[in-house]
Image (cartoon, rainbow, N blue to C red; front, side, top):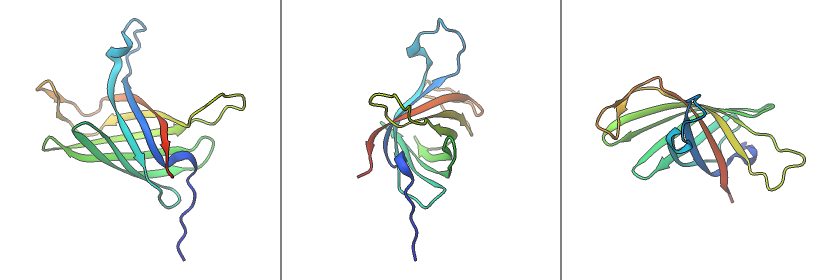
Length: 144
């Protein structure tokens, strides 16, 4: 007997953005950008998080867990080879509950990301391990 539970509003394609944790309110919003892309969340057995995060020229496979509660929590790791070197990032996020009076509310995940190992930066330097940023994702296309 095979059991594949419904994981609710998580499966599908999400629009992803991450922001640097700069407390200076005068920092221009565009200067806070850390990353952007898409997350595809796949149907998986209960408690399992599986998918990929990707953008132009890069892709990481996502594996982790889902804890069901109030709110639902996702914890996963993204791993992949980008530009010939390994990238690893760890994520934790929380599914925002629906507002009873919300209009056209989309499912949203929000949380924290940490760069687990260093990798080359686009500017020719090194992007160090341990950098923590805030991320969020909004459901764009639910799974059919």
